[in-house]
Amino acid sequence: MEPRGKPSRLRARAHPCRRNTVNDTRPTTVVCLSSFLKGHDFIRECKRLGCRVLLITVEKLRDADWPRESIDEVFYMPDLYQREDVIHGVSYLARSEHIDRIVPLDEFDLEMASTLREHLRVPGMGETTVRYFRDKLAMRMRAQEAGIAVPEFVPILQNDRVRQYLETVPPPWVLKPRLSASAIGIRKLDDPDEVWRIIEELGDRRSFHLLERFVRGDVFHVDSLAWEKEILFAEAHGYLNPPFEVYHGGGLFCTRTLPRDSDTARALKDLDQEVAIALGMVRGALHTEFIRGEEDGRFYFLETAARVGGANIADMTEAATGINLWREWARLEVASARREEYRAPEARDDSAGLLISLARQEWPDTGAYDDPEIVWRLNKRHHAGLLVASPSQERVEGLLRQYMERFREDFHASMPAPETAAQAVD
Image (tube, rainbow, N blue to C red; front, side, top):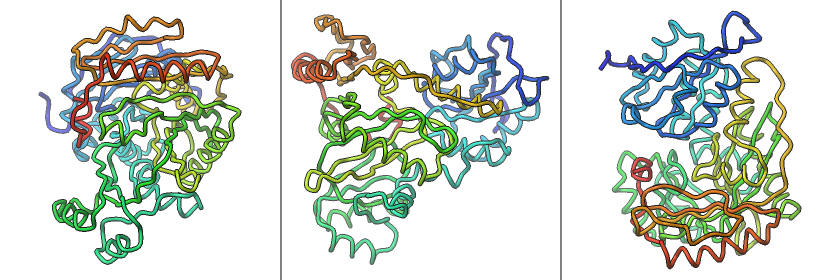
């Protein structure tokens, strides 16, 4: 182990690098920051474009299956959440490396990436803006200020405000961690006394939470790419089961392409652009979620993240459109570093759907599912998953509904909802 704050390294084989258009004596250097194993296509595309690619990750991923042929050097730290240690380590790295871009490959690394950009004066999203893409309270307040509908909410700060909220906003409510991801750590509550009991249990952690009105309805997500404050590509999808029910009710994760000429898809894409502008997105990938209220039919903004959507959503998007969000994110980051223009490629108009379930079997066999529309199968311990694609949206929808019933019989298992990101990964 090397000195505290100084990352240890493992050198990968070198590659020829394209020269930076700003300074033709060196390559464009991209630092990828990731606490989880992901972003392989991003890394490979940066290398294909001729960049020098440096990966900073955690010790527990030292033996993970990174695309090492596309990485010039890998650096390891105990974790990426200790602010001063990471600043010291990357500043030490900057003594010998001219860093052009710092890119977090996972949502939980967004804040650290912004901290490093601020400290090293590297272009990109800074600490103030990144709060709007990580902090559920900050993003709600900003969206509300911009006139975007959000469910009624209150920060768990001032007791009188919380008390007034509980008296005026009808239950149920959801208690949400401000800095978590997906549905991790969210609790649905119906009784004010229970709310106060949990707030008391949270102690000093209460300020890291908010309370929000639970809205029943269909949940959607828009996965998009922004360039110079404009959404150049967006694909609207709809969950067949709301993520909250999947995490807390043991349901099946299932989402699919929405008909592109539908009023729903158009409205969601317009809202996605509004959210991106309101929150200050300049360039990058976006995964944004909305809900259409069952009672009033209105679309409400739920949350967004400056990253590619997880749970193989990028694979589904590529199966439907031919556009790989990870690769395009790499292309636009490199184009920005080189002061070049970026244009999103032409998208196909196919449809795709994704189905994933926890499985009773250690290595479930999906061989009995043999429709030609299946383009990908999940290979993960105690999980079963399929991705289907077709020019017909109706065919995709029909297959997913059929498979959901079969998955419940053949594979489905459930377990307690994860309280932390580490538990969700493990």
